[in-house]
Image (cartoon, rainbow, N blue to C red; front, side, top):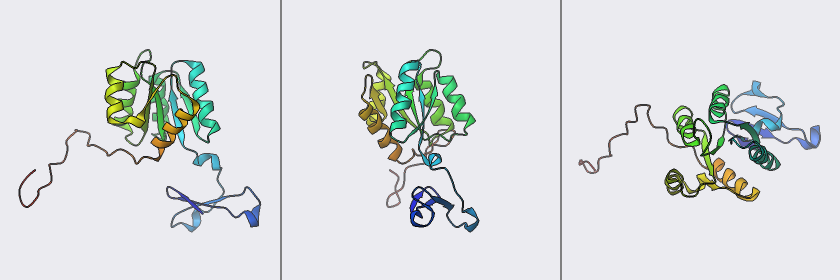
Amino acid sequence: MLKNGDWYKLYPNRIFGRNSHFFFREGSVSGWGFMDYQALKPTVLVVEDQTALRRLIVRMLDRHGIAGLEAGRAVQGLSIVRERHGAIDLAVVDMVMPGMSGLDLATELEREYPNVKILYISGYTDSIAMDVIARREPDAVLLKPFTERALVDHVKRLLEMPPRKMVPADGAMSPPTRRNGTSG
């Protein structure tokens, strides 16, 4: 038995055959049923303006059991995430694109869907934004050109990380905790 979120996956191979699986929700007897195992694959949105590179990234991820969606522009990527109501595990975002930049897209995604993780890709090593992101989240930056192994390793590390903490919409942070009746 394998737990994925609030779904459990059973492998009753001896009874129903080699590749059969049952899925059910925790605490629900009526939740029994068959389900396509593809639905449990992590979903990654690749937002890259270079068509050949975008398709190559999606193929590389697919070879490693990761479902890939594609968008050629940041606005298109944002639209896909909104249509799926944030049901994207990770967005691979090119930093430099025509129109809305990858950084602007990532900012919008973080604001609207804080559970969507971001992997920034760029061919520009001298970018101040990339340097700041790399210092804050080293696993969230991948410089072009990269190998399939490097891409998959970065994606899997990010997928395994816990979601970022949600910040209230007004940006207010909670006051510092008090120690022994004093602040700070």
